[in-house]
Image (cartoon, rainbow, N blue to C red):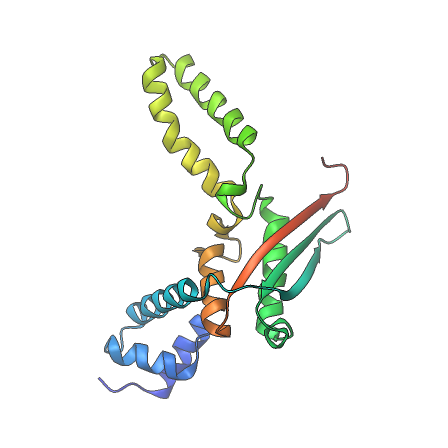
Length: 198
């Protein structure tokens, strides 16, 4: 199948990948747009994995203030070079992350950073719910594992579904920007402030 410039442009618009990467992906998948998107996402994953141990000592602190000024977010997104820190795609990514945090109120960037007392509190609630529904304690504790995994995926930032595109997780977005920028990028920390909130 002949790969047209229109097909390449459509794939580029959908993935933000480079023109040549889009062309190669379409050639490998014989013009199948969905398979080409998957191929580019896999490539992003492998690029991200290769760069994961590089230091991210440059970056930006991005803000998002929700209409009315009652909700605001600060997020620190790191990268390897000042060149990338000033790149428009990088700052747009950081802004999207700040906006996403405002909308979803995650507890931590990654599951390992969720405080143990938060997980234990949820665990106790789930176990009690199962016992109250008539399940024996041993079965209730086994049922809880799945519920805890689901809870963690909902409150760990990188595992959340992106509010602007629920087909992607924040980790998917991170992998895409790493592949596009060609260097390691990390979401380091964030703070979410809400008037009258805790």
